Image (cartoon, rainbow, N blue to C red; front, top):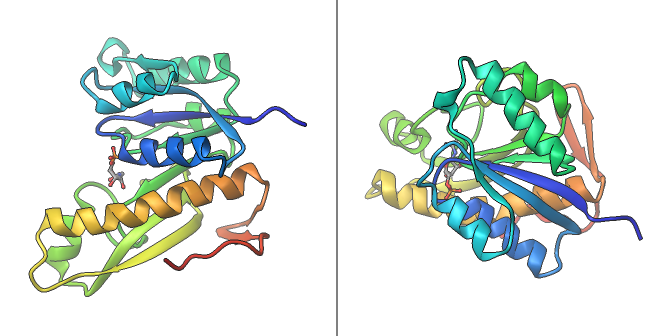
Length: 211
Ligand code: GAR
């Protein structure tokens, strides 16, 4: 049997999406291995989560690099050094450059806490509440040069309730993130995603986008 596909995860914070993916891999649901976790924040809990699961964890300080491109070149070197084939942004709060994008064409995914193209960028849940939408959710997409603009792989909708705060909405959206991100990773690993232009189709009968 072929070696499990190697994944590199970039995170800046808590790492709950990282955890959801680790759990799904450990449960045997995804034939892949997280080869490394890299953060740009020394205090990111994602580092601790990785260590607890025996995953190489690295803090790479962006402030030590003169430009975004130089930082991304260092990321590419680390990711390649670990044999990574799929890169996951999991709460990685940095804009990435073509240096990273071109090293992993159509092989970088991101999770965003809104139904894109609505509410890209920072504070998506706050944007949704301020706009007054009745439905928001989350999106897994391939990363391109734009901010949260790449081809959409999966989405899940979440009702916005009258008494929602940013925190309550974020927490219900996060539950859906933890369901669809591992699912999208599984589809990639099983070679079940077909990308034509902006459209991503799933060539897998077992997928369910419903809870
Ligand atoms: C998640 O809600 C993710 O959707 C969001 O950051 C959070 C990270 O949580 N990402 C973005 O807003 C990217 N624009 P986590 O560290 O617990 O996975």
